[in-house]
Length: 275
Image (tube, rainbow, N blue to C red):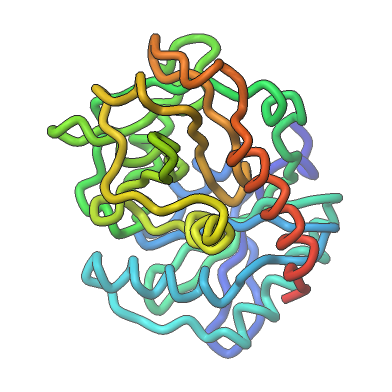
């Protein structure tokens, strides 16, 4: 792997300015070299544009506070840093990770390619795992190593691991939120999951399209799910057509999922702006 392809990380100085740290092979490896803290992940659109950046800053602050590290992100300084690192890397598209260990802020950047179009046309498989977050509302860097180990252990052909509660509720993915459509309503866990930025966008876009149900889909209800999908910044809305051995609906991405994919892509094009 060349230096150009490696993940580059900078620390953002309180008054502005950047100091570059050692490069790493992946965002996960970069996180292991940084102090424990809160994090959030973003991707670019058209190389420089970002979506709902203030929501990502608030997420950093909320997660840090939940982990006993309260602090405020200086938005003007952070935006200046993001502009600088995107210019320095000059990737066609980038994935960025902001790590906030109050009062310190770090920006890691890697080259990004969206998932192949075939996954959106065919859907993906998920597997239920016995993994959980200690603090489900905090996006804490200590979970990154747990998630990486779980990904490495996934069966061949499985795209995402889903975390389930003791009551069988399907909570969220290792790096995504999970939604299902069952009996004509949209089901997703509310209390025991990370409230992802893309999750919030999808809930906005689903209003008027599909009624909102209450509570998460349980593993013993998979047979009644007509469609499902996971959401994340890197994936957008990605259809799920199988969970373990259960085929959902007719085994193809459903109409509500396809419409949400379309609506989210339109919103990204309309709202993403340079930092």
